[in-house]
Image 1 (cartoon, rainbow, N blue to C red):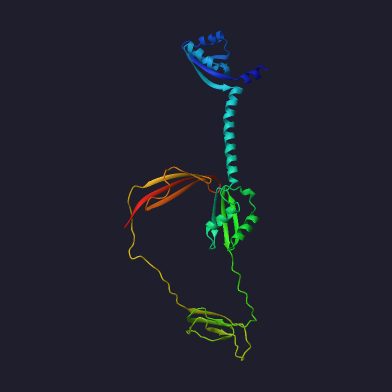
Image 2 (cartoon, rainbow, N blue to C red):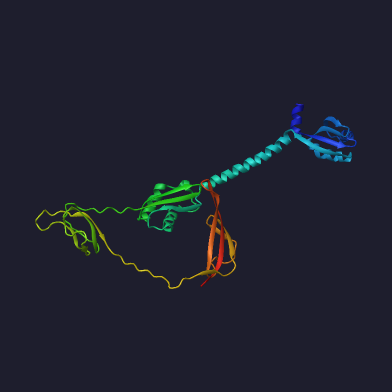
Length: 326
């Protein structure tokens, strides 16, 4: 029981050094300070244990005795609580940080089109997805992939397939262009193969029908190349074949007579901004429109780790260099 009380109260192992260290135990007894396990290490040094609650008083007592007090170790519940409290604070900070990163990963903080083989602009695709609730700050576990895909494809008939992949707060959109339906023709229909434009025949392969031209012939648009045989000498067929011709295209382009050269004309300016979610905080007073002719280089550094987590924050650095045109 007595040992348990000592553990709860706690104690400190001290070393007292001075010209007359034996005066320190006498002074502690006179002032009611609990001191135990007193041992002499040498004529000028003693060692003992005091209660943790009396440690500050013991230091003052040692000074009055002309000695110095040094704490060698802390024992008992108070010392154990100090060590555990530090570890607990670190553990709590780690848990809070991990929970924050996990909660952040459940929202979309960046969205971009990663694959697009269609003629639909990326901006149009992102605008349609935002109308369906897929945008910056969206809670992606609530997404319904089938519903988003069906609604988006209804707004974008030029696409045949769409997918939104979310990982670590970043959403990647992949789309595929709609495939044009193949031309359906009736093989029993009587038809000719005609030239689409003028040219000189280089290759001619007839599968069905009668050829009306040969290699080296010049043809005009609409001219019959393979006939369906309507003369009565043979049964009419659906003419088929492969025809290659050398044709001519005319292109027109405009070019300025003089070239414009850019030269630096002034001091380089730097501006900074902070993006938090959808909000941008500019650390400059002007409107952001470059004054006159200048080169504008923008670097955006997103806060996060690639393929691990992404935070809704980014640092923007702009570099403006005035130019003179000559």
